[in-house]
Amino acid sequence: MPIATTNPATGQVLKTYDPMSAEQIDAAIERADLAYRQLGRTTLDQRAGWMNAAADLLDAERDEIARIMTTEMGKTYASAKAEVTKCATAARFYAAHAAEFLADEPADAAAVSAARAFVRYQPIGPVLAVMPWNFPLWQVMRFAAPALMAGNTGLLKHASNVPQTALLLEDLFRRAGFPEGAFTTLLVGSEAVDQILSDPRVRAATLTGSEGAGRSIAQIAGRELKKTVLELGGSDPFVVMPSADLDKAAEVATTARCQNNGQSCIAAKRFIVHADVFDAFAEKFAANMAALRVGDPMDEQTDVGPLASERGRDEVHAQVRDAVEKGATVLVGGEPPAGDGWWYPPTVVTGLTPEMRMWHEEVFGPVAGLFRVSSYDEAIEVANGTTFGLGSNAWTRDEDEQARFATDLDAGNVFINGMTTSFPELPFGGVKNSGYGRELSALGMREFCNTKTVWVGEGAGSVGPAGAHAE
Image (cartoon, rainbow, N blue to C red; front, side, top):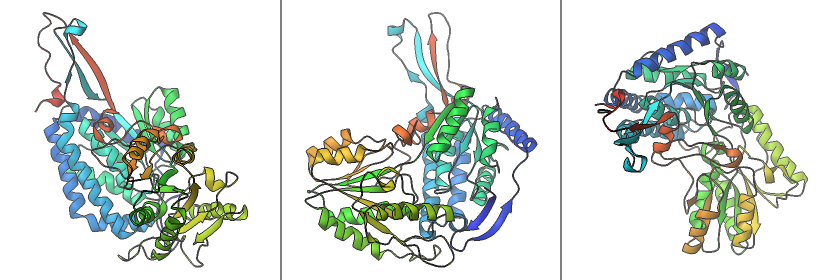
């Protein structure tokens, strides 16, 4: 795939970039390794100052950054601006909480026959981040902010269709004050990942992307004995029970399915509705989906912009056609419009069966599948009957059902009476084929730390805090 900015609203190629050579990649890794050693001589206060400066730059340049994202991958300008703001919030969160998350944790010294015992969190070195195009700023920031604050350095291999956003991120951290090489964008294709991750100076990798990409990264990292965090696909259930507020559920369902033009791993995709309220919910949901405005993503009134690529749009339509040909019914949408650009209308499909692709596969576009169930147990069976386990939603005002959903839904995230989203304060990740490891919160920061046990015997003298932790 060429490294290029192609406007998905028009299909026009705006900028192209030459991929880096093997020599350029090696030099970038060397700079990241040297920067890691330099960061080890800085304090958390220094790094927090740089991270807060990055947040200030994001706020000051929000509109222009958002315009670049919209041009490169088609998300609405309004949602792009919100993404920039969210990134600034995350940067400030880790600047404020890194000292707490990385503080030495005392252990029961007497239980282990020590004068003192504690756990220390220390950085491990350059980390490769292989990132997707759908949230081109946020996906990177939620890795970069905790990694840099911990004292690691970042090597970014971004999706090939968002090169301007990728280069912007390197420039952002450099202008914020981080040492040269602390965060480096590698303009390379996927074929270069093996070379990069196999380099002994690169200590770990994080990937957000497809199952196939995750398996490839995990295979390389396993061979090289390197830590990985993987956030892969999702086919999130959105369960609606008889006691739910149907108006609110249908309203949130519409946003949950069509956020980011339907191109989100944690977008609700399978709407599992109890038979007692199925018809009422379906009518409200279909009407809401039909009312969404599809159009120019730079227009503040637009709800849904184009899909990011022609291939992606064609794949979504193939999944819908497969369902229709096998007996499913389209309530709304289902046909891409004629003309330039990679558009697909908000679509609702019902009557799905296991023979259809939509029953098993993630649909990465504004297409919802409706499933009718007759009981709580059947709802759980359908919700968990997938290889994915990223996010999940349950709508019920019954407190016993709420407690059961929290336990029974097989996912990394359970949101009850609300839309699945990510917060810096909460861990984020999946189970099953949706990946492993966690981003965000203290857990996300510690994923790329050496969790070091320190045991001190009698008469060993004082063992103070790590230099990088001293303020």
